[in-house]
Image 1: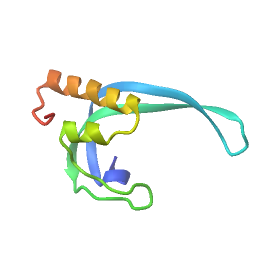
Image 2: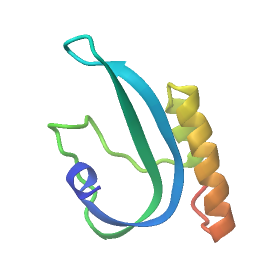
Image 3: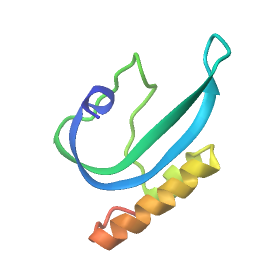
Image 4: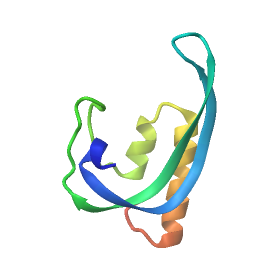
Length: 93
């Protein structure tokens, strides 16, 4: 997280992983697994690594959901919000 956001974060919960295949530059089918986590910042300052990402923002859940392109990402956000409610976080509205 620090490389992408400038923040040291602590994993609070695992979220569902995403498995899919893609074709590499040689046309070979390659499996890929993306692991997701619910995290909380421990220290650092929010900043952008311009070589890897365009922007970093803190958003309320509704605005974040409206910006997501893929259905899987919207579903993952719903799972994360459900887990945050279980742990008592107040920053999900």
